[in-house]
Image 1 (tube, rainbow, N blue to C red):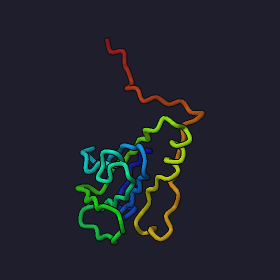
Image 2 (spheres, helix red, strand yellow):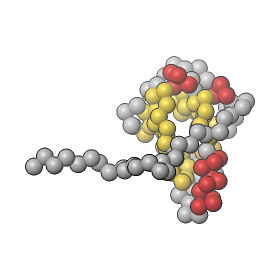
Image 3 (cartoon, rainbow, N blue to C red):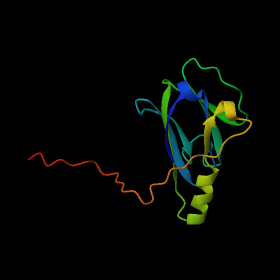
Amino acid sequence: MLGLVSLGRTGPLVIDVPAGPTAGAVLDFWQRPVTDTGLTGPDGGAGGGHLAVGPRQEFPDVAGAGVVVMPTMNLVHGTRILSTDPDEAARTLESCRVYPASRLADPPPARILRPEGREWSGTQPRVNAY
């Protein structure tokens, strides 16, 4: 799961990562790491919430969430599911939540866009310049 977010538009952002074998990070606009999530994060894979707050933003107290003060208003967050069991991976993906803190009382499900049926490549483009 990967997201690009403007905290100027959303306000403080809650990133809930479920317990289980995941690894991820929250990066600032310049792709500098701010915190890890999942197995390498503060919760060590036990599941936990992160409240990303932009510079000079006020934020609510979110029980159980660690506050991540961002140096920029834009962030990148990503979570990689490490389970090799397809059912466990699907359950983990469905449990991931990313939403504005203003929706804390009624968090929406994550909107997952899937590339099935579309051509996609993560390979760097190549130009035959020689």
